[in-house]
Image (tube, rainbow, N blue to C red; front, side, top):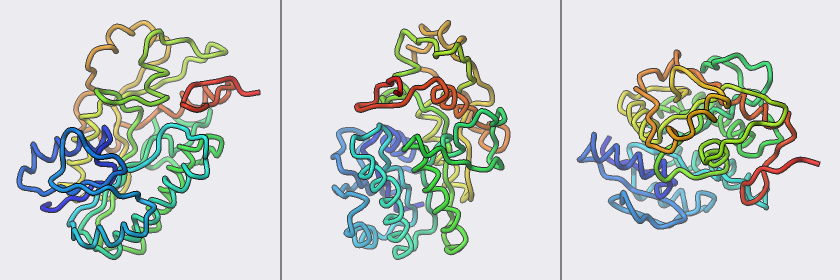
Length: 288
């Protein structure tokens, strides 16, 4: 890998991946794309670019990357759900069209464990062979599901491009702040309504970046769960609040496939069945 283009390069995941590339591939050139200018872990070149923009194709073709990493995605709920969908799904569609024209050797896309769908009959843990089942009530997860369907089609129609995608569980670490991390890592950790005690997992941001880079360097294909080999429950989490205030590492990332699995979806299902949804700017609230 010599020329790497990263969308969403100014976000926490993008910055962590840039740091990992600097460490393991010091000669690689990095081109960052984002709607926010970087302030740390700077790429070699950077351009303000919305992934929904028709200019993305020209920008990518001009850079001529051998590797593309697509991390740009809206996580926190937006008031305008249609705009969120446009960025997440249509933006990815636009990115894939640009990749087809630029013809890099490899493409890695960040998906999520939530793409499996939060269903009460999910097995624990979930492996990559488990079918995806969309929950349309949760915009972020349903968008990830739709993106994965596009990736499956892309893998069939573009066999000359090595395609992989990650499915991390809840990511935790420095700089990570969204509606889910705040709900489960900011003390006090409150019990869920109905005394539900679902299994859940966290993975450190640096582990996700290291896993992504390992997948790229090995030219691996397909989906990869990125999660620890074990899990804990809300009850255990409430008893370990002090430990979670410290820097937490999930352990080695060698458990990518198939042993790691994911069980974070069970937590989302418990929230939904308890009548909790998410409001702007990402706080939980009780559904009517």
